[in-house]
Structure formats: C-alpha cells, structure tokens
Picture 1 (tube, rainbow, N blue to C red):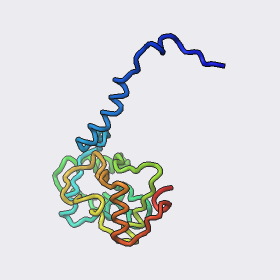
Picture 2 (cartoon, rainbow, N blue to C red):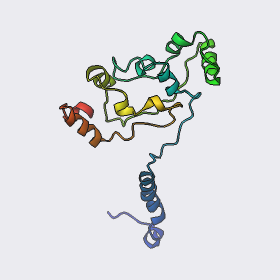
Picture 3 (spheres, helix red, strand yellow):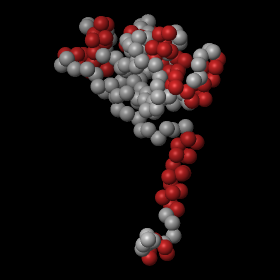
Length: 178
C-alpha cells in the first residue's frame, strides 16, 4: 500500500528558512562565545572577591565539595556562622539577614550544570585529587558578583581528557559517562 501525499507537499518548496535558522543560530552562538543560555537572576549580588579577601575559602561556603559528588550551594546556616552580626554596610547583607530572619534558604540558582550523561564528582577532584577549585572554575577570588551563567563551559571532553592524561588518571569512558 502506498502512502498518500497531499498535492501541496509535492509542489511546495522545502522550508529552507527554518532549516537555515536551525543551523545558523548555534553557529553564531559558538562564534560569539555564547552558550545560548540566558543569564539567570540571582537573589542578590554576592562578592566572591570580598569573601576571599576575608580569607574565606571555597569549602567554607560550598561545604560538601570535598566530601560529596556535588559541591552544593551555600546554605543559610553556613552564612550565619559569620553573619550573626552585621559585618558591613552592604544592601546584599541586609537581604541575606532578611532570609535568615524568615528562616528561609537563599534561593540561589544553580548555573553550572552538566549534560545528563556526564558524571563529575567534586569529591574525586577536590577531596581525593586535592585539586584547587580554580583549576575548573577560574579565578573566583576576583569575581565581585554572584554567577549568573556557567563558568565551566570551557571544560570540554577534550579538556578533561587532557587533564586526566597530564595527571596520569584513567580516561576509561565509564569513569565520566554513565
């Protein structure tokens, strides 16, 4: 049995505009260095730089990075270890203290997300391999704001393979791909 086609599908030219847009948009994104992800709105500005200047390291706020697969975002109880009393005169700290007063977590938006088929363990990299966070996340000690987009997009499969080779660590596919 033959499938019936409508007369219009045979005589209409293919929709090249739509196909062209599907090819052109990602290409322009790659050429401009953009991932295509729009920046997210964080609940308030957060100066990583100010915290580094106060000699607070990454693991103080991202408590589980050395012990668990996921680094986790800061939780209010961790913030209150230092901010029980007001530390400065910033509007950001006022917002933080309002969350604490309401006994609410700060609704940080996770910006560093990996594809579902990629497994990355902070515990393996930070805890066991004792890698510095800056190896993957760059110089956060210079960043004066909360991240609104990923700062690990440069970590391609090639970059990870090269790092594993440099450190004589396995490149077996199932180590990182589940």
